[in-house]
Image (cartoon, rainbow, N blue to C red; front, side, top):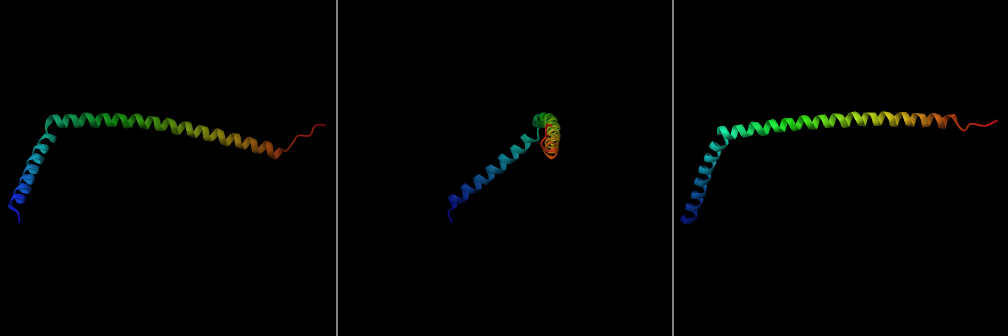
Length: 87
């Protein structure tokens, strides 16, 4: 086995461990937690806004559907009545 390759792999592994450890400390820092909190709060506000829009669209769709059903019912009644004969 090539010892030069082993040394390179070991160096990459050790570098990864050190980078990962530094990353964990960075991600768990007070500033990072503050940033996560602000990002989560913004996401929750966005969710609320989207849900309000979805509710409005659903209400409008229900109104359109009800109007369309009424229109079709009136047309069916007119067709069932048949043509009106003038005397």
